[in-house]
Length: 528
Image (cartoon, rainbow, N blue to C red; front, side, top):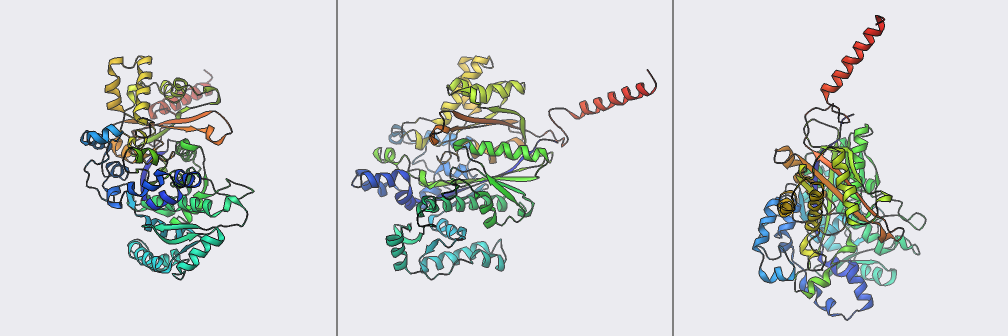
């Protein structure tokens, strides 16, 4: 069985400023412990309008309109004031489009309505006029892709009859979670159980947000890449949330719930969890299942985490910068049987952070980079692009966390020096050539290598590059079960065009083995 291929990738961004204020963990905790803080008073002044989100260069890179190499060049245009505060692209002129070749940027009202459509237990209530307006917009948009009966099925729960008084009552008396658009209450999400904290309105809100944004990304994959949804036979969901009840807190299954609403009839599915490294684990799992012949077409998908909205907001407000974490990121990636064309996923040379690896940076990078390269008989410089934790430095640098991708690339370069693959004087050149500036929404799992996959497919198939290494890392200590680190890496490379290549044995070698076997058999029959 030959290697699986990386067939297509799609992305979605949701602008969610009201959710920053009302649902992000940093803000909700601040409101509880310090309700009169200067941060909460200044917060709304630092929220961006939708137009600024569309015209922001890293977002244009995320949805496919601005290649990472072009994004890198724009950093030179940032003002000295912003640069001093730690920004890289804030304020840099960039005329963007909400639609890109890999995905789309969605407004908050569209997202709220998708949460309503995603709800199959009648937990989401929207004010009648708002709901009617969004229903009409949805019909106009979806009529390009769906029949009248299909749209009617989507809108089965949309009644357009709830009054704002009832929504206010549900929030006040039944602990419902409010839904806001342009600072105005437009709906709420009810709790799903009276005493089960895992089914509280807050948790249901977070779970529906993951589901809705995952659906948006999956629909972008199907539509922008012309994929027949009937051909998808497995969906793996790999976000950072977990749905369940008091008896099985993380039981799942986001994957099948997303597939159901996205209109994928022949699929099954399950969830994979691994903090920030989950998407990388999911990609390797999907590729291995396809290679084994268990499935032909597997989609990995992840929605965004509302808890992380405005996570570093205090740092941005203090430095008089806009809150960049006002968006949810989502993605969907298709892994398929070898077609002889698309890049292959080398599941035979994985980098693995094992229990024995430990948490020392050098040991971690050795396990994830050196070991697979040595197994594949490759140098550090033989990987054209390393796609690491692609966090946007506009978020991390003002918060004091530095430029995460750059730090990873310098570490990889240092490994190359130690291995003798490059000179110490070539470190800066290596970082520039083999690295990229980060552009992904900083939500843990979203930046984990996968934001580059859309470009990787194009760059490899066009002959611009030959080989990519995807590296995912995770912080398992966050769950308070272990202090162990986590990580996995995989090489993605140009397809040789030979669908039958298997386990690193060429067609010529296979033919030679067969010829030798036939010769030996003939000799034995002749008694030689």
